[in-house]
Length: 472
Image 1 (spheres, rainbow, N blue to C red):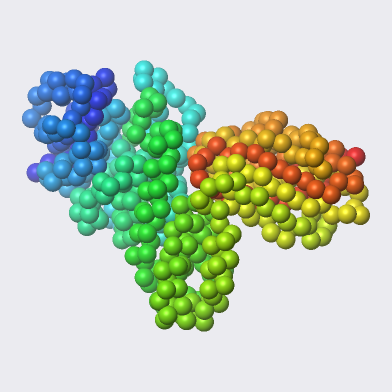
Image 2: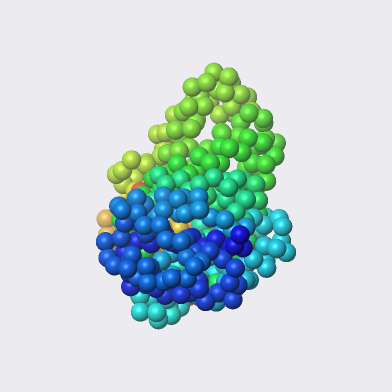
């Protein structure tokens, strides 16, 4: 029996699959089997694969395309190794990948699956040093509760770097091939429910970014990802022990210091709601509607958390998740400690937004610093269209918390950041007698996002970029 089963799904990668196969055959740990499943390629991938006669290779061709995760599941039925690795047919293992990851798992019995960082190359094998994948696959680690908390909204685990115990994969179950973009994330969540995950800081893989990756940047990919994430999040409903749920989401203590048995679905829904993401908000409200349809649950939620039908109706009426820009009107409550404090500062927005604020009268304010936080961070570029005071456009200068140079009129340039990012604008030359402020722009992301906005008097603070904005 081989020590490791390496599974390689193949689809129209004739240009790259030879290098992928050779990277497996060149491993310093030679006790492996390589199971290649060609998923109905229309190019000459089959001929390239057939040219390799190493007895450790098993080749399973599909007559028609059935999907990568169906291919992987079929290959898993043939796997005999104690450990299982995955390799895309356009990527390459580094020579000691299997040896290093097996050594780690052998000395860490509490870890069921191991990943690593990656070296990124382009379609011509040239190294790529700074793109969104280098940010996505940044190393992080923690116990399984921390991983479940992180995977609730993010994913930094690079699928083809994995090495898992076969017993762990068998316990978790096969990939759910209803998902095209996020079947791997779904599996990682199921695995983290019962065992540890670890990411090695040193790379074990050359990850190829050639612009045609399955997890790319196209609109269909982004829309599918949003749809799939909404259903994958339901995995968290499997956590029925309140103590376990609080270990995953310690900030639930802000809702209730002590969880009440029988209410974990409600708590997961509230956690989803707090992300501000469209797909999470939809799941949360759907879940709350179903819970409130049960008289016993309705009574329990009201007595335990004060959640009433009135609150449900307010949530449903305050969540703009089905299209159309949100237009929010709010009043500043007071000028306090150099800040203009607003009554409500969270807005659920579509990709276009139009926010309107009433400015306080009687205060001579010549300039503001406007700060906005995206929840979650936007996937790529967000732009500010204009800021207007009483119908007249005013100049702005932008900055963001990732220390990029200020860009005039731009909310921020973010490529799959791992954490929410703060963006700011130095908003100057607002007339002292202005009574209304309007902020409009566009988020370059389909669906809803949330923005938190507040203002500071420019006289009281300097912009994070180091330049003080002086009131006029």
